[in-house]
Image (tube, rainbow, N blue to C red; front, side):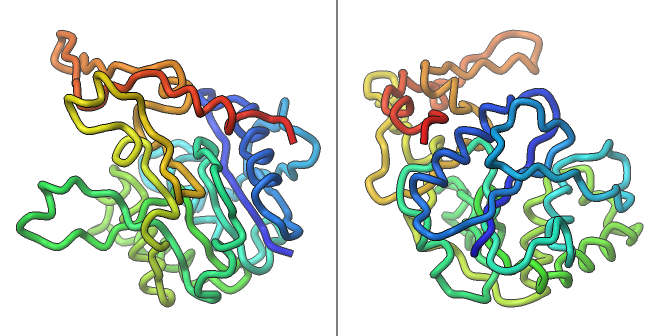
Length: 264
């Protein structure tokens, strides 16, 4: 028995995200699994999904709870009674292929996507050792050291600035401190933004493609899955006027419909 876990909070993502993620896992994972959703609102989530509450707030500075740092509490021994290999998936990923390999690959290691970094940022330096937490695996019941690292960082006044930003850098550091970290093989997890949308200006004329060997497609930032399905134009209004970012524009992506649904 293996575990698949996801997190849902706030109002942006409806229950259908969880239901469709479950359907994708059920279709593409051949072994028995326990599917857990950590949520403060189980309304509308299908009965096959086991809904559990969030851990108590460990005292993350300056943020409401739950928040992006909730993922670090999943590593706490005994959380939700989880034991053994556990694959954590964001609810806004698209399952496109076999998932068994994510449990067979380098057992005992922490496994995570190496975060996608734009090519121009890697010309004069190595890509940073930062994972993208849209898809990672750990051994529940044997990963408490990650949670303890998180608690130490949280209580260190000199690290307060870390908690004003994203959680992925901290999570990656915590996993490296607690054991061996392996990156998923290249191509197993694709970024819709980086690897499906053709580069500018081709994205204005060619629809996003589905990567052949990817089993998971991550939708980090915009476009999200519904935006990608119908077509998307990124409009930045931070400056007080609308600025279209052409490189983040995509044509409609019809192949999403065949993959993103709640039918088993």
